[in-house]
Image 1 (cartoon, rainbow, N blue to C red):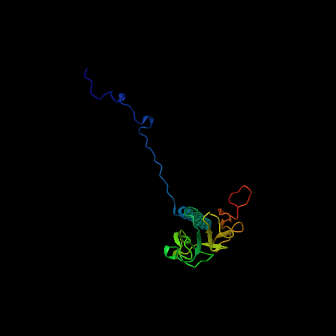
Image 2 (image 1 turned 30 degrees about the horizontal axis):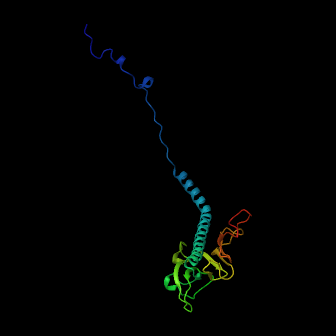
Image 3 (image 1 turned 60 degrees about the vertical axis):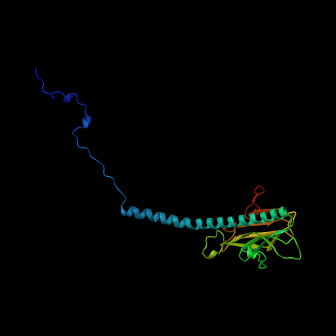
Length: 219
């Protein structure tokens, strides 16, 4: 008997769709955001950003204060180290003059800075010539136009001097780092710091708002 090709072979062909073969499949439409929903979302984000802005600005000011206080602390430590290493007196002076080598012999000293210079005193009196070691500007990292720093320096002396043994010459010096227009903690949100040079030559950076016997940040 002749068997026509293809007859009866459909029964052996696998069904790809199974029982759903021949049934019209429905697809779900993807729905996007409406204009109203988008405006509501943007409004919520704007309100949250406005609420967070003061805290972020205060955080930035606190970080600037910390950076400047740490830089000053490092310079005082360097002045003491250089005095011992060179076996001659070395001093850090606060000044309103540019903190560059040409200003090393300046007499324009001020307890409010904002700049400072580390210099070696002459080892051949009566010469008053100084040797430049380092200079730092208080406006470094201030992030303000015109180079004006948001950090205010207040000190009970314009000079921190160490003798050849690394001991402080004169009485203890306290340098305060505060924020322009800000109220120091705990009365306000501003983080104010101090650098203290003790009579023995020890130098430390501390937080006057810190309290507790176990807190190493206390002044």
